[in-house]
Each structure stands twice: as C-alpha cells, then as structure tokens.
Length: 360
Image (cartoon, rainbow, N blue to C red):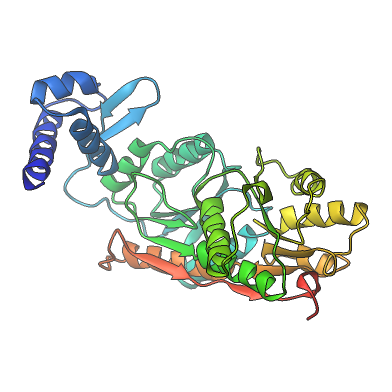
C-alpha cells in the first residue's frame, strides 16, 4: 500500500516537472503514452492528472485532451478598492434561489461589495461561460450553486485558483474542485419526512424525484433508511426518478402511473414542492383526497405549500442561511482568513407539518 502511494506521488511530481517545461495550452500526451513513459498503471496516471487539473496545473477539453494551464505569478493579484462578488445559480425564478440570493446580498451589502448574479439554467456549459467571464472581469470572489447537466470545466477552476479568486460552493460539490461548501442535510430532511409518514400509519410510501444526481440520491438514501429503520421493505415499484428536469408535468404523470398499480401507494414523498403540486393535481383528478386517502409531503417549503387547497407539508430548506453562510465564508477568504479548502457547513432542515400529511 505504501509503495503504491509512493509511486502515485512520484508520478505526480514527474508530471509537474514536465508541465513546468511546457508552454501554456500545450497538449499533454495521451494517458497510454504517459503510462508507458513513466512505467505506471493507467489508474495512477488518471489519478495524478485528475488532481493536477483540480490544482490548476492542467485543464481538460472534452474529446480533445488535457492541456497545460496558464500559471499565475507568485504574488496575489491586486484588489481594487471596489470589491465585487459573482453569484452563479441555476435560476433566480426558482422558489429556492431568491432566498439564497437574499442571504448573499445582505452580507455583501453589509461589506459594501458589489454583487453580480448569473443564471445557468442548470447547464454546465453556461456555468463555464460565466466563470470565464467573471475571471475576465476581475471579480474578487465567486459563489456557485453547481449546474447538474453537463461537465464542469475544471481548467477554469484552476484559473480561478491561479488568479487567487476564492470560491465557495453551495448545495453540492463539483468533482475535482476543492473549495469550501455550504450544504443542507438532504439525507436527514428526507428521513424526517418519511419517518413522519410512517408514524401516521402509512406502509406503501412512494418517492418521486427529479432525475438521478447527488441531491436526489441523498434524499433517496434518507427515504430508504427511514423504511429500513421501521422494518419495511424497499419496493422499487414505488420509486420514480423522472426522466427529465422539465417542470410542465412534473409529478403528475408519475402519480397517474403509480395509482394504476395494486396495491396503490398510501403516501408520497416528493423531491420538491413542484413535484408535489403535480402529484396533488393527479390525485385530485382521480377523486382521491390528499391528507386522507393519500398523504403527501414536498420539499423546500416554498409558497406552493400555502397555495394548495389542502396545505402541503414540506421540508424546510434553509435557502437564506445557505446564501448568508456562503457569503460570510467567501468574504473571510477575500480578507485572507485561513479557511480550509475542505471546510463544509451542514445546515439541518426541518419538517413543517400541514394538512397534506394527515391531521395537524
């Protein structure tokens, strides 16, 4: 084991030496060629290159290869008197992100820092473009709620590091990027919701989710753990990861299909309130009374909860606190505070009980 670890470090150091002798944007040889050159396993080469991308020595282009990144000078870049921070989020119109924005804005305003807001529509390609533009604009710090569709350009994060521009991630991480994070405990939020349904005597509890990614999987784990703790079998037929991130019919079609099975679900836990709203509509159209025939719980505790005829029980996602904590971390980093790259602030969600999960 020690010999293997030493070999990996040795190869990484040799790659750094080779990189230092190459001009920026020079393409590296293939992984196979490097494995032959250093007499190392392909997995050792992959690990070394992955870390060098994350550390800003290299950057990758899909389908093109790995290239030498531009290296920053040893001195940090000069900061302007008027500081600015970029906030990159999926969609400011989404119910959860106005709260995050407000949390960030309150902190930046308190420190007289300008705020630039960028919407990615959850597309990594747009995220990459905004990161590049913010670097070019001379931004002083960046907060990112990572996009979930497409790969992040790790080379750009290397450029942020080279330029001494601090980054804080919200809600989830980016593989290959080391940065402080502010996240909500998705596992616990889902576990609490499903445990509540079990406590109401329900035994066929469905989970309807957005497509599989880190957050939806964490909530699925919480769902599955609550069932296991209660000695209830996990029924795959009651678990639906919807095929797209579209919002027009979310929840609705899934419930229509679930209700055709026998025995049908007697409770449904939804990934978010949008899906729960679609589920509510489908249940109503089938003549089922939400809160009696079928119990229903959403997630995010948005304005949807109070708008439904039977008010929706939901897990409260601390959007404001996530934004405020992220901004405080970032401002501390901009001021030179020693904040670890692996620092994680985990916020605990809470269940807000209303009529849809039974009598209040």
